[in-house]
Length: 253
Image (cartoon, rainbow, N blue to C red):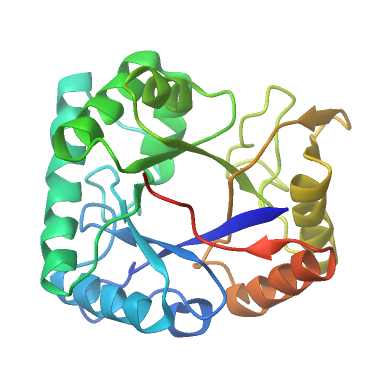
């Protein structure tokens, strides 16, 4: 058994720090680097990519909606053409800095509201996939198992990775519970570790109504902006390795 551990990093902006990138980077295998729309700035992007290179962590683009104030977690009315353009713009910007640092991008993972919208809206999912294909058809596209986003990637000929979230509550249909809902983010370390191990070794997770959801996950997200994120990441990695799971970045074709 093997799993990729990814985390959303590079989310500081100007003088405002965010996350625990320095502590998380040695624990994960893939970093989703904010591209400047929902968080991040050119200096932070470069510093994050350098940190990833130092620790041998694969780098991916983390494009979001243009909403710095809402951290990209507020849904917006955007047309598919707009989504395609904004994703292509952000991936291209990140790739340019990565190339200067001698790093090749591995994947693309949409952020926050854009991710959730594209997971359920076929038109937006296809727009994201078109943008990724236009830039580099060998990039891995992340998405929820069984989602429109993952299917759009497959239909476009992209390599895809099904993503699971150990610290997020799942609704019975397999979607993530909205952050506005109580209990949407799980903070109990033991519970999160147990869920992570079950997701990888049993390919299941318990939904909010008590039902069991079955899925196969290629990558597991460890949020970097939650309190105690680094300690939680260490506990999750230790729990997975104790269960015989190998932590490794995805293989890009």
